[in-house]
Image (tube, rainbow, N blue to C red; front, side, top):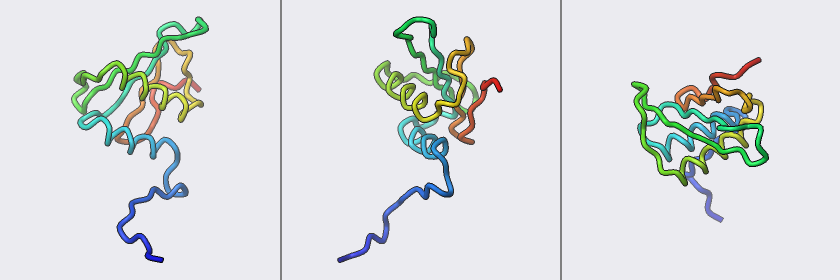
Length: 104
């Protein structure tokens, strides 16, 4: 059997789920520094998710609706500890893989 020499794997001991997600989102969203996710009406049985992407200068980066919904769901499932019912939402910084706007 041949061994894989040039395989790129993410070591789960060195990086947690947030770091892995940030790495994947950076590849899918070039030029985006942070994404802001919020539920538009968290009290309804079918809340509407909104994702806004910004670059390093905090300028809006356009993303298609389908991609925004998919990525918002990824973020919510990967980071369940965030305060998703907050009216302000949560910002996920792709550079540091940290959640901002989380209430303790």
